[in-house]
Length: 349
Image (spheres, rainbow, N blue to C red):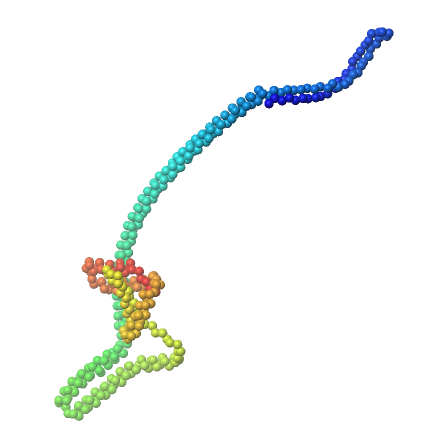
């Protein structure tokens, strides 16, 4: 846009001028000094139409360039993003493909190693089971021998005790055989003979003799029978006869068993109690025991010590039962019985 500017200024001036003048009368020369200010007014007209036109053209060009740059930038950004996604996808797929391949190879290697290890463990387990069965059979056989040895030791101990108290045992046998049985039979036979051959006086004497011997036998038996009473009285003399206010519980052993029928769902429960109890006591104990055992949920596995003791007793009974049975079928029954016993889980309250 064209415009006009006005400027005003004052310009000072000063100077010295030499002068000379001819002689009119007497000529001469001199110096004159002058000074002052001059007012200056300046008007400047600026024509900006060509510049404005060039600026307008430049703006139009710049706008077109800007639009082109924006379009190019958008296209370039879109291309860069698309290329980035493709490159990222290729990298990610390649990375995970490599990892997947590596993991597959490692899994195959580990699977082969595990299968080989499991096969080895299985074979070793079979060998250990076979060795265990052989050791158990040997142990049962050796334990049965020791049981027989201890039985022989018990018998030998009985013989030695019998030898030490031989007089007492002989007296008992003599009393049982001679005084009770033999004398009675001999006397009865003699009485029958003498009743036929001797007079009644001899019969009376014989009866008196028998009566005397019978008294001696009864006296000996009375002393032998009352020996425990005398010892009990002697022991009671050292004890205090105190009465207890509360009731003293009496314990009796009771065996309760539960089993399942083969091929069925019914359960069989039985209770075994000592024979010296009457039927009412047995029935009451059976009801209480069945209610306690069948309704109790706190069954637990028995300890290792208890199971070991039961195993020893069972092994002795099984070895004793199958000791004289050498056929293949009986030996299979024996091994199956031991296997069932070893694989059973014993529980107790």
